[in-house]
Image (spheres, rainbow, N blue to C red):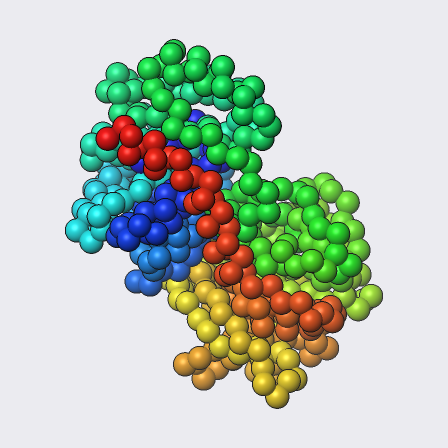
Length: 478
């Protein structure tokens, strides 16, 4: 099991690297994260929903993602509430205090998944969540040491030296653990190091003498990785391309990995615009997915985006809405069942002639098809996935955005003037042909194609090569 001294210490990356290293050796290996809290999710081969980091780790292991790899997924809908997903399906919406009591039930689901994975794979590389040092969450813990103790597995502890205070992070974490939990940690991994390693070596010796535990590896800071972010938007930095795309960073933004291919395009300057930031002029505006569409719609209104969208369209700009963003573009969003809080109806931006009804059942499916918005004789291929609780009805005369394999009706909608496109397809930019076609529709005439799948494979291989010393060190311990 790989645990971290903080969130974003590099647990997901280390797990993916170990999975790829073992897979290279011919080992049947699978990743697992008992409990994940994230708004970036993926659809699995068994028709469920898991964190995107576990889908990436499955790719590193050379296998298809399965719900047993992330049996408990929490998708926050407010500061104190979340949608609880067990074995890939929505179980309930709970407040934090209620979920704390529910953890005993959730642990049963976690152990079921672990046992099934044990029967199929030689090695399971498990990722912790956050930090094991959260003493207020120790009781009924299923995400870190609670799981490690239950299944009796060794633990690697990772810390991010780029943040500073790496030695304090290790010592402080150990101090918060029980004796049995401390004994379970077999060694440390220092992540994101840059500089002269000889200047770090006195600290490494001090840490090993102080704790009696070895430093298994010091991993370098690797620039330019194309890996799925687990949750938070990683950086506000943007490119220098000539074609500007802006995306509002709404409070409950989901699956912002939709924009990874655009961020990798050399001719695109993609910017996430946060609260109270100046909203620049752009060639294309994309409204992203949301875990709480009605609340995020009101947030956008408060931030002045409604006027920005109208002005953008008057000046000839293009606009795309993905999933929750697609729902926002319509005339209204009706929530009679209280899916997103108090029942009611919220007026949309009124830019597409559509209406949305939020439903209790979540739609989860992987899709393939063609881009219907292009006039080409041979439309571009598209791949993607749907994750939404809602049905959107478009005026029958509106053109569809995509034509999906196995479906008689078109998916999504395009406005009569061709300036606005709405769709439920997450990952619509991931296929090189679809990405190029969408950018051409938006006004970028470019022959460059971004192969995101190839970039991810290259990144997985890079982190695996860098993490090879971890396996070597573990072999010496054995």
